[in-house]
Image (cartoon, rainbow, N blue to C red):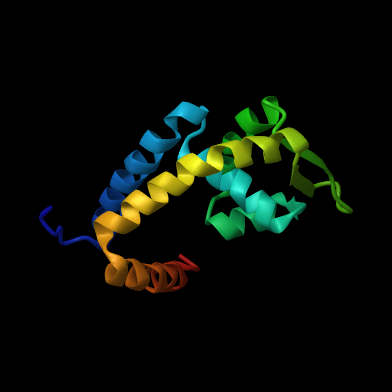
Length: 141
């Protein structure tokens, strides 16, 4: 068991890196990383969404989100169009993006099941609520 560090941020980041490796390992055959899969999944759930709204949903700043979107747009998986305000960009999955998401889903599900099995049912249930509370308590920083 890893040593508990005295910094909550350090412990969360270490856990995040470990979970990211597990998901990336399963998604490797798809050519996607879990961060990219998450963007496709979020747009699939939201439908067309302003970039700012997507950034808030994923707790990403504009610069980071723009950098993450670029390769997905280049591959034709995400399209954008101007919103009512010239500064606003509306993002959506393309048909190719939805196909990529669907063809990658079984790999994501395998990662999800593996992580859930390793963590155990009780801790899995607790984790969801706790992570939502962590995100809420961290807002406005």
